[in-house]
Length: 255
Ligand code: MN
Image (cartoon, rainbow, N blue to C red; front, side):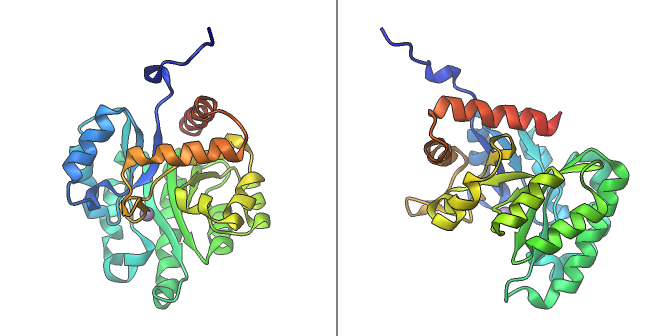
């Protein structure tokens, strides 16, 4: 009889970048993550949202909450950097932060850089933070600032939904970055080509829900299994093995 892994013994799923507080039924989503033991990083878009998220996570060991100031709302909320500063000592996890040079947000790019640098300096001072980082059309600038202020010794960076070039990915690997991958990246051949060249030891998974869709609906954390299956296929291994690798990566990242 062939040995089969009992589903209960599968290493847990990982959704290392999800905006739980932005789902209309966010209480349900928090409950699902707890019940299914999904290793979750609940990111926030403004520092003001952080405390409520911590409360909702309710001390659950599998739900981490990131203190964030999203580059797409920096124009509106940059003064909340004071709140970010106030909470930072109590939060090991930081995100969503980063840079966005797409046309809708380019006008705030100088301000975004100012805020991102301030965030990185504060994180470097306090050491040991894990950051979930947004970069759209700004991979080079993000890596420049990470190298200048944080990496490799003063904190850890997870590049969320990385869309940079292969040489940029290689530079990020050398700096010690991790990559949280979602289904969207795996749907594009260009995304897969960059992914295939990354060390397996730097991969994590995410949904970026509710901003991505799965079967026409906002992706939920448990839908991340589809991404694990696709990653396993990309790296030519079975799903349980891929889950094991992802959980080992998570452990190393947070150690
Ligand atoms: Mn996001």
